[in-house]
Length: 242
Image (cartoon, rainbow, N blue to C red; front, top):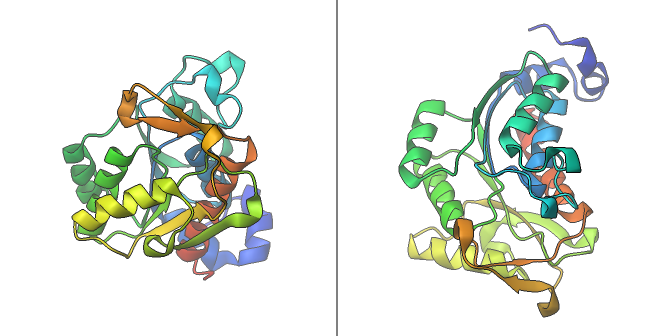
């Protein structure tokens, strides 16, 4: 497989075989907010050649503080379409599929059966659809890495990656673990989380739209760092670097 010139610096670091493996890999990225948008960016710039991106949301002014595709000129536009265009501009040869919708349980399992992904990145910030994705990944025995709560966090040094059974000081992770346990899943899911304690003052309740009952305040860099950590793990595993 011919390595494109724009990947010259990456190839110098990782070697031709690793780049070839990344170019042949097939990844599913669900959720294109602060975590998912940056995770996708790093995957594409590293040479991942096949990706499916999913998000049914549009850019809101409140997204501008932390989401890659969110600027004033893109308010009201599809998050998925914006990233589709951006990723194809980075790599014109990229094989990318896009779904501008919030996936239902049946959709998710069917997509995994048809797609045969090498890795799944779960960047969903609502528990119910997140559980659906994680259960489907376990059912298909597809490697998956899940983002826990980046909200209410400020200290980058507290970001960790481990099995979900070992997460701590993350209320979102606790809720996910509790729901997974009811489904008979106690471990076997890789998670990115922060051990920093979330301040109660940063929490706001919502009307439950799009499965969300509450959310924490966020700083610009933390969701991006969660995405970076997820992409790093996936790139190194798919590229045979770990």
